Image (tube, rainbow, N blue to C red):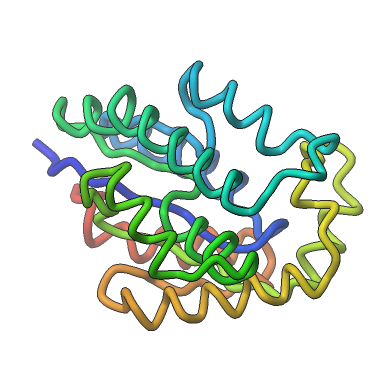
Length: 211
């Protein structure tokens, strides 16, 4: 039986996380590995409702602390309702974003403090962290250009932020990488998407795909 793993995917807007996760879903099915594929904020009904509030482009007056607390609340419900039960059943969990996003976006880019936001999330998750995280490294400018070209992508409130905000997000992620080097694998997301996928797959082969 495969060991249950909680694998998260992080990176700036437009980094290609969703596409890679969709491809990994097929790979896991081909190897008959039980898994759950989910996202944050969201993944279950209550968290999806909170997501609609956080990312609604009309909610431009939302305070930074309100935003951080809403993310933590959605994360808590998603964790106890979806992630932990799946892990207890021996499944692999692929999750698009988790705590690291809050540290980079709200902790650093919003100026709330990485330690302060980490503390909120430690309470929300009871210190549950991912087993492995892929960070898709991408220039903020390139990411925003990709978003602009993708008519099928959900346009949300964070997409309305200017380039300097997304540059701060990248700086925030750099601090997160320094903090958790043993957990986070950096992937060059400026490559063609098939090369990005191959890089992720090579890392996972040692952990999951054992013929």
